[in-house]
Length: 252
Image (cartoon, rainbow, N blue to C red; front, side, top):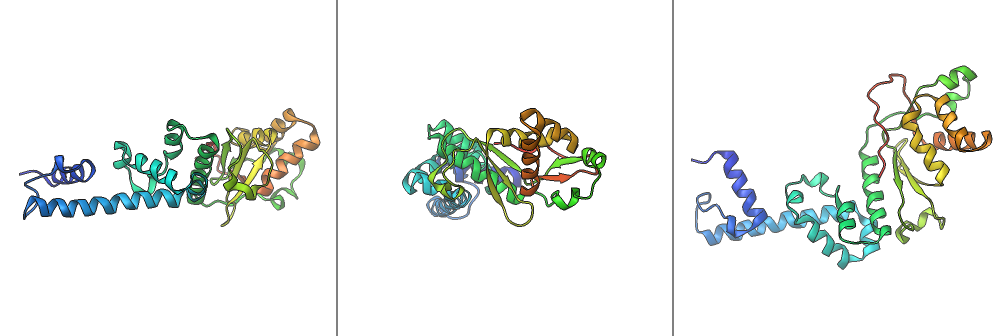
C-alpha cells in the first residue's frame, strides 16, 4: 500500500500535470467524477496563483495592461519550479521571468521595485537612527557610533526610465530607488549616483566615522554631510550596539 507521502505526491502530480498522471487507485467512484473534481480544484489553485501575482504587482499590471500581464502570469505559474512554490513566495522570481521573456527595462525594474516593496513591508521591526540620537554626541562619540542598515532598507539600481506607473515620484531620471520603512509607512526615495553609492556603503561602514569617510570620497564636506543626513532622515540606518547578526541591505 502506498504511503501517505506517496499518495500526496501522486495527487499533486495529477493537479500539476493533468489526467495522464491520474492515480487510479486513490479515489472511490468513477475516474470521470474524480477527474472533474480534480479539474475544479486545479482551476481554483491556478486562479489563486494568478490573483497572488496581481496583488504582488498592481503597478506592473497597470504598466503592462491586463492582457499582456495575464499572458505572462499564466506562462510564469506553469513553470515546474513555480508549481511547487509556496503561494506566499510565488511572485519572487517574476522579474527574472520578465527579463527572459524580453520585456522592456521599465517593466522589469517595476517588478523588482514592487517585490522590494513587499520585502520591506515584511521585514523585521527595528528602531531607526534619528537626528535626535546624534545631536548631543561629542565628535568622538559620533564617529564611533556603530551603524547597520535598517532591516527594511532595499536598494534598486534602475536599468531603464521610470515607469509611468511611478509618476508620483516626479519627472526626474534617478539612478536608483531606496525603499525604507522606518515606522509603519513605506516610502520610496529617488537617488542620484552619489546618493546610491552612499546608501550602498551603509552595510560596509560599521561606524558613522567610516560612513562619513566614504561620503568625503564622493565629494566635499558639505555634500558628505548632506548625504548622511538624507539617509538618517529617510530612516535607512539603525544603531548597531550589538554588532552582530546584521545582514547587508538587499539590492535588486
